[in-house]
Length: 189
Image 1 (cartoon, helix red, strand yellow):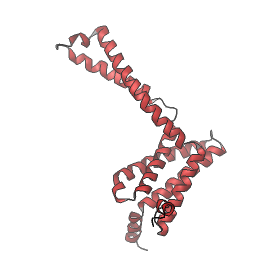
Image 2 (cartoon, one colour; image 1 turned 30 degrees about the vertical axis):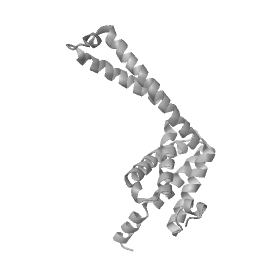
Image 3 (cartoon, one colour; image 1 turned 135 degrees about the vertical axis):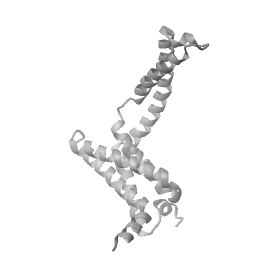
Image 4 (cartoon, one colour; image 1 turned 30 degrees about the horizontal axis):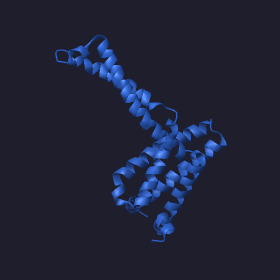
Protein backbone atom coordinates (compact mmCIF):
# COMPACT_ATOMS: atom_id res chain seq x y z
CA UNK A 1 0.00 0.00 0.00
CA UNK A 2 1.61 3.30 -1.05
CA UNK A 3 1.40 6.61 0.79
CA UNK A 4 -1.07 8.07 -1.72
CA UNK A 5 -3.60 5.32 -1.25
CA UNK A 6 -3.30 5.54 2.56
CA UNK A 7 -3.92 9.28 2.38
CA UNK A 8 -6.90 8.77 0.07
CA UNK A 9 -8.32 6.13 2.43
CA UNK A 10 -7.94 8.38 5.47
CA UNK A 11 -9.49 11.36 3.69
CA UNK A 12 -12.44 9.21 2.56
CA UNK A 13 -13.10 8.00 6.12
CA UNK A 14 -12.49 11.05 8.32
CA UNK A 15 -15.86 10.90 10.18
CA UNK A 16 -15.37 7.21 10.98
CA UNK A 17 -11.83 7.78 12.22
CA UNK A 18 -12.91 10.74 14.34
CA UNK A 19 -15.80 8.74 15.82
CA UNK A 20 -13.54 5.80 16.62
CA UNK A 21 -10.82 7.90 18.26
CA UNK A 22 -13.38 10.08 20.07
CA UNK A 23 -15.22 7.03 21.35
CA UNK A 24 -11.97 5.47 22.55
CA UNK A 25 -10.93 8.73 24.24
CA UNK A 26 -14.31 8.95 26.02
CA UNK A 27 -14.00 5.29 27.07
CA UNK A 28 -10.54 5.95 28.51
CA UNK A 29 -11.82 9.03 30.36
CA UNK A 30 -14.64 6.96 31.89
CA UNK A 31 -12.30 4.09 32.75
CA UNK A 32 -9.70 6.28 34.46
CA UNK A 33 -12.43 8.28 36.23
CA UNK A 34 -14.12 5.16 37.64
CA UNK A 35 -10.79 3.61 38.56
CA UNK A 36 -9.39 6.68 40.38
CA UNK A 37 -10.72 10.16 39.67
CA UNK A 38 -7.80 11.87 41.43
CA UNK A 39 -5.09 9.99 39.52
CA UNK A 40 -2.67 11.57 37.09
CA UNK A 41 -3.89 9.12 34.42
CA UNK A 42 -7.40 10.55 34.69
CA UNK A 43 -6.11 14.12 34.55
CA UNK A 44 -3.97 13.25 31.52
CA UNK A 45 -6.97 11.63 29.82
CA UNK A 46 -9.04 14.77 30.51
CA UNK A 47 -6.38 16.92 28.83
CA UNK A 48 -6.14 14.49 25.93
CA UNK A 49 -9.95 14.49 25.69
CA UNK A 50 -9.96 18.30 25.74
CA UNK A 51 -7.49 18.50 22.87
CA UNK A 52 -9.15 15.81 20.78
CA UNK A 53 -12.65 17.13 21.62
CA UNK A 54 -11.68 20.58 20.35
CA UNK A 55 -10.25 18.97 17.22
CA UNK A 56 -13.46 16.95 16.75
CA UNK A 57 -15.60 20.09 16.99
CA UNK A 58 -13.34 22.08 14.67
CA UNK A 59 -13.31 19.34 12.03
CA UNK A 60 -17.05 18.77 12.21
CA UNK A 61 -17.88 22.48 12.03
CA UNK A 62 -15.62 22.91 9.00
CA UNK A 63 -16.68 19.72 7.20
CA UNK A 64 -20.19 18.82 8.39
CA UNK A 65 -21.80 19.63 5.04
CA UNK A 66 -19.93 16.70 3.47
CA UNK A 67 -20.91 14.24 6.22
CA UNK A 68 -24.12 12.50 7.18
CA UNK A 69 -26.12 14.43 9.76
CA UNK A 70 -26.19 11.82 12.56
CA UNK A 71 -22.42 11.13 12.63
CA UNK A 72 -21.71 14.87 12.49
CA UNK A 73 -24.07 15.51 15.42
CA UNK A 74 -22.52 12.61 17.34
CA UNK A 75 -19.03 14.00 16.72
CA UNK A 76 -20.04 17.46 17.95
CA UNK A 77 -21.82 16.04 21.02
CA UNK A 78 -18.88 13.83 21.97
CA UNK A 79 -16.42 16.64 21.30
CA UNK A 80 -18.42 18.98 23.56
CA UNK A 81 -18.55 16.33 26.30
CA UNK A 82 -14.78 15.89 26.13
CA UNK A 83 -14.05 19.64 25.99
CA UNK A 84 -16.35 20.69 28.84
CA UNK A 85 -15.14 18.02 31.30
CA UNK A 86 -12.04 19.86 32.63
CA UNK A 87 -13.96 23.15 32.89
CA UNK A 88 -16.96 21.98 34.90
CA UNK A 89 -15.94 23.95 37.99
CA UNK A 90 -14.53 27.09 36.35
CA UNK A 91 -16.70 30.21 36.71
CA UNK A 92 -16.32 31.85 33.32
CA UNK A 93 -19.11 34.33 34.05
CA UNK A 94 -17.08 35.96 36.81
CA UNK A 95 -13.91 36.04 34.70
CA UNK A 96 -15.82 37.51 31.74
CA UNK A 97 -17.61 40.09 33.92
CA UNK A 98 -14.32 41.25 35.45
CA UNK A 99 -12.86 41.58 31.96
CA UNK A 100 -15.85 43.59 30.74
CA UNK A 101 -15.72 45.76 33.85
CA UNK A 102 -12.03 46.55 33.25
CA UNK A 103 -12.62 47.24 29.54
CA UNK A 104 -15.64 49.43 30.33
CA UNK A 105 -13.59 51.43 32.82
CA UNK A 106 -10.87 51.84 30.23
CA UNK A 107 -13.18 52.90 27.38
CA UNK A 108 -15.32 55.18 29.55
CA UNK A 109 -12.23 57.37 29.88
CA UNK A 110 -12.58 58.14 26.15
CA UNK A 111 -15.84 59.99 26.83
CA UNK A 112 -13.96 63.08 28.04
CA UNK A 113 -14.96 66.10 25.97
CA UNK A 114 -18.33 64.60 24.92
CA UNK A 115 -21.86 65.04 26.27
CA UNK A 116 -21.28 61.98 28.48
CA UNK A 117 -18.15 63.47 30.05
CA UNK A 118 -19.60 62.87 33.52
CA UNK A 119 -18.96 59.13 32.99
CA UNK A 120 -15.32 59.72 32.00
CA UNK A 121 -13.85 60.18 35.46
CA UNK A 122 -14.26 59.67 39.18
CA UNK A 123 -17.00 57.70 40.87
CA UNK A 124 -19.48 57.81 37.97
CA UNK A 125 -16.89 56.03 35.80
CA UNK A 126 -16.35 53.34 38.46
CA UNK A 127 -20.10 52.90 39.04
CA UNK A 128 -20.88 52.70 35.30
CA UNK A 129 -18.11 50.09 34.79
CA UNK A 130 -19.43 48.12 37.78
CA UNK A 131 -23.00 48.20 36.43
CA UNK A 132 -21.85 47.06 32.98
CA UNK A 133 -19.85 44.25 34.60
CA UNK A 134 -22.86 43.23 36.73
CA UNK A 135 -25.19 43.10 33.72
CA UNK A 136 -22.61 41.10 31.77
CA UNK A 137 -22.25 38.75 34.77
CA UNK A 138 -26.00 38.13 34.93
CA UNK A 139 -26.20 37.28 31.23
CA UNK A 140 -23.05 35.16 31.20
CA UNK A 141 -24.02 33.41 34.44
CA UNK A 142 -27.29 32.32 32.84
CA UNK A 143 -25.50 31.04 29.72
CA UNK A 144 -22.83 29.37 31.87
CA UNK A 145 -25.50 27.61 33.93
CA UNK A 146 -27.11 26.20 30.78
CA UNK A 147 -23.76 25.04 29.37
CA UNK A 148 -22.77 23.49 32.70
CA UNK A 149 -26.09 21.67 33.00
CA UNK A 150 -25.61 20.15 29.56
CA UNK A 151 -21.97 19.43 30.38
CA UNK A 152 -22.84 17.73 33.66
CA UNK A 153 -25.42 15.56 31.93
CA UNK A 154 -23.01 14.58 29.16
CA UNK A 155 -20.18 13.99 31.64
CA UNK A 156 -22.17 11.80 33.98
CA UNK A 157 -19.96 8.78 33.50
CA UNK A 158 -22.71 6.25 32.60
CA UNK A 159 -23.99 8.61 29.89
CA UNK A 160 -20.45 9.33 28.69
CA UNK A 161 -19.89 5.57 28.53
CA UNK A 162 -23.01 5.12 26.38
CA UNK A 163 -21.91 8.01 24.16
CA UNK A 164 -18.47 6.41 23.74
CA UNK A 165 -19.97 3.04 22.83
CA UNK A 166 -22.38 4.65 20.34
CA UNK A 167 -19.43 6.47 18.71
CA UNK A 168 -17.49 3.24 18.36
CA UNK A 169 -20.49 1.30 17.00
CA UNK A 170 -21.22 4.13 14.56
CA UNK A 171 -17.65 4.12 13.28
CA UNK A 172 -17.60 0.32 12.90
CA UNK A 173 -20.89 0.39 10.98
CA UNK A 174 -19.62 3.17 8.73
CA UNK A 175 -16.28 1.42 8.13
CA UNK A 176 -18.16 -1.80 7.33
CA UNK A 177 -20.33 -0.06 4.77
CA UNK A 178 -23.59 -0.52 6.68
CA UNK A 179 -24.31 3.20 6.84
CA UNK A 180 -25.16 4.88 10.09
CA UNK A 181 -26.54 3.60 13.38
CA UNK A 182 -29.41 6.00 12.77
CA UNK A 183 -30.20 4.19 9.51
CA UNK A 184 -29.95 0.86 11.31
CA UNK A 185 -32.37 1.91 14.07
CA UNK A 186 -34.91 3.63 11.82
CA UNK A 187 -34.72 0.93 9.13
CA UNK A 188 -34.01 3.45 6.38
CA UNK A 189 -31.05 1.63 4.83
